[in-house]
Image (tube, rainbow, N blue to C red; front, side, top):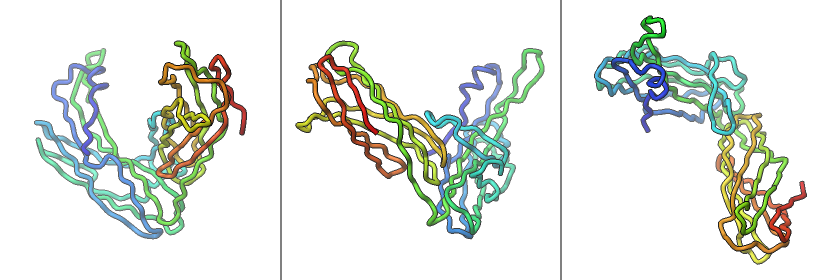
Length: 279
C-alpha cells in the first residue's frame, strides 16, 4: 500500500504554493520479529510521482500514542523514550534525489540486543520540500512535509499480549420510545509488552438465547502500560418493547488476535431502564 504525503492541511495554510512535490513510500509500517542478538534487513521504496525532482532527507525518531482513542501519535528525539528501538536501526542513504516520476530505495538493518524483552518502537521519516510560499510579512517560506514508516521490533520468544479490563459501567434505556439509548463503558490497561489496537463487540441476550440488542465498541490503541477507555452508545434496533427481566451482556474484546470475553447480568425494568451491578 502506497502512502502519499497529505497536503490538505498545508494547502489550507499555504494556498499559494506554486508547485508542490509529493512522495510515496511502499511500507508505512514495518513489524519485525528478530531473534535476540540477531539482525534483519529490508528496503523501503520511495516514489516521486511529481514533475519536479524531489530532495528527500531520511532520519529516525521515537513515537508514542498521544491518544488511545484514535491512535494519533507524538514524536520524540531518537532514543529518548523507554521503548525506543531507534538506536537499533541503521539505514542508508540518508539523502535521496529522486527525478520526476522516479523511484529510489533505502536499505535498513535492525540489530536486536541480546537482552531485549518485549516490543520496541521507532519511526523512519522521509522529509521533502512541498514548495515555497510567503508568510504574512511577505517573506518567502519553504514548506516542508514528511511521512513516516513506523517500526515495531519484537524480539522472538519474548512478546506477551495481555490486558486488564476494569470499571465496567452500563447505563441507559432500552424501550420503544425515541429516548432509547444504552451506554457501555469500561477501562482497558495494556498489561503485556507489545502494542495492540483493540476491537470489541457486545450483545444482550434473553434467557431464551435471543439477542435483543447488539453493537460495536470503540477501538483502543495502546503501547505497553497504556490505559484507555472503551465505550459504546447504541440504540436498540428493534422497535418492540423489551420485556422487563434479567438479561446477559456478553462483551468480546480482541487484543491483537487474542479474545477476552466478559459476561455479566443486566436487569431491565418495565420502563426499559437498564441497571447493572457486579465486578
